[in-house]
Length: 477
Image 1 (cartoon, rainbow, N blue to C red):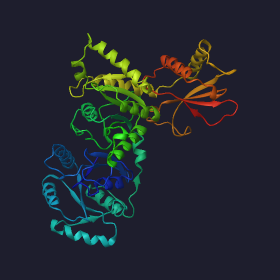
Image 2: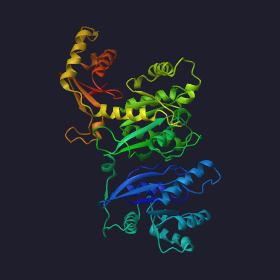
Image 3: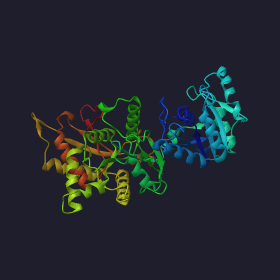
Image 4: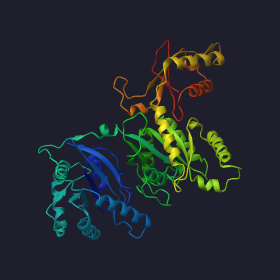
C-alpha cells in the first residue's frame, strides 16, 4: 500500500491540507507553529485504491530544543519511508531560508516529491507562485486547504506520481467513516505525564510516539495500527489511540489546550475500549475522577491501568507486592466508583513489565463485549433477586420489572451488525410498571448479581426502562 507524507515548515497548513484530502477532521488544526508533533496516519480510498496519508510535525521551529529535534526526527523518518512526499509551502509567506534547507534535505532523502503551495485562495493569488521560481522545479501546485480549492487536481497528480490509474473528470473518494468503521479502537486516556505515550510505544514494540518529560507533549489523538494483536472472535484490525493529557478545566488558560482536550473527549466517545492510565505514586486525583465520569457517560468498556508501578513498589510498606496491590485496588474502587466493574492492571511501561497481562485483559474485555446475554437466564436472575430482595416501597407502590432483553447498542437495530458493533456494550431494554418508582441502590444490587452470572468485567450495562402503560421513549439509567 503506497504511503504519502505531508512535509514542511510549521504553520504552512499541512494538517489542514491533510484533513481536506481525507474529507474529515482527523488532525488538529490551530493557528500556531508546532501544533502537530507525532505523525498521524490515515487510510483513504481514491477510485478503489487504498493510500496511506501521513501528517507530520513542522520542521525548523526550534532546532535546538530536544522536543523539536524529536519532532523533526519523526517527520524525517516518515518522509524517508514514503513513496511520495508532498512538500507544503506557504504561498502568502513566500520562500523562507528554512525552506531552502528542507529542499536540500528532500533532494537527498526523498524518492519522489510534489511541491504544493497552500493558501492560494483565489486565481489572483497564483501570482504568488513566482516567489518559488528559484527552486527550479517543473511545477508547483496551487491549492487552498481552507477553501477546498485545487484538491481534485492534486489528488490526480498524486495518483499519477504513484503510478495508479486516475479518472480524468473527477476523482471520487470513499468516505473515511466506511473505513474507520471496521477498526477496533483502544484509546489511552489520562492526565498529562502519566505515561500514555510510553505505554503506546511499549505495546507497539517500537518508538512510534514522542516521549518527553514535558507535560502536554502529545497534542492530538494519534491512531496507530496494532498489526500483531487480534481480538478473540473478531476479524477486524486493531488500533491504539494515544491522546493528549487532560488537565482540570479550571487550570486550562490556553485555547489550544482546550481544543486538545475536546479531541480527547471525542476519542473517548468513538473508541471501543478505554485504557484509563493512572500514575502509581500519585494515586487517584480529582481529575482522574472526572475522566472516569467521562468514560461512564460515554458508556465505554474500560481497564484501569496503574503505570509506573515499579516506583510505587519501591516505596511500599506492605509485606508483599500482592498485599500492596490489594490495598491499592480497594482505594481505587472507593475513588473511581464509576468504573467499579473495570479490571485493574499494574505495570511499568518503562521496564516492559505487566504488558502481557494487559494484552490478555484487553482480549478478555473484547470477548465480554462480543458475548450475548441470553434472555431466559437474565430474566430468571432478575426474578430471583426481586423475590429475595424486593424493591423498596414508594408510598403504596413498588417498582416491578416485567421483562428484560439484552441487545447490542447498534446505530440502527435494522442494520446488520459489523464486528466493531459487536464491541458495543449491551442495552438492557426493560419493561416495567412505573420508572419513577425505581430505587438506584436496588438497581445497583441487581446489576452486581447479573455481573456475577455473566462475563461482564469491564463492560458497562445500559438500562433502558419502558413503562408498560405508556410505552414512552426509553429512559437510560
